[in-house]
Amino acid sequence: MATTSTVTVGCKLPNGLVLELAGQRHELAGARTAKAGGYGLTPVPADFWQVWAQKYAGFPPLEAGLIFAQTTPEKAAGQAKEQASLRTGMEPLNPAAPAPGITPA
Image (cartoon, rainbow, N blue to C red; front, top):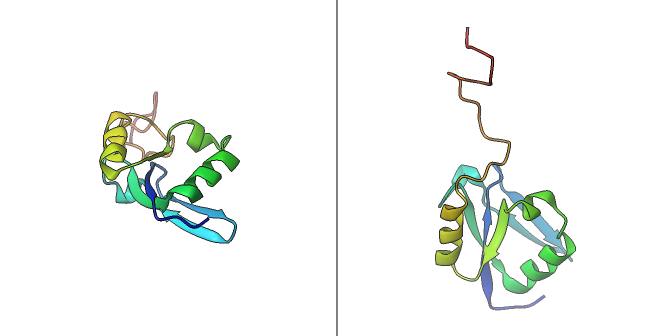
C-alpha cells in the first residue's frame, strides 16, 4: 500500500476512530476536534482508504455517512457542512431538556 495521493476522511464520531489494516494505522479526528459540520477531517493515503472502506463496507458508521472520504479537503468540508444535521446518537444531552417527559429537578 504505497501511494502519494491522499483523501480527506471526515469522521463525526466523538473521539474519532483508529483505522488499522495490514500493519498500517491511521487515527481519524472526530467531532471533538471538528473542522466543519461537526466532522473531524484527516488526510489518509488513498489506497489505504480504498482497501479499508471496501473491507469494512458494512461498518454502521460508514454506511450511515458518519465516516466518509473526499478527494480534497475542500470537498470534504463541503460534504461535512451538508451533513451537519446528521445525528450519531452520541450527542451530549441538553440539561434543560434531557429527554421527552423528563424535567430537570
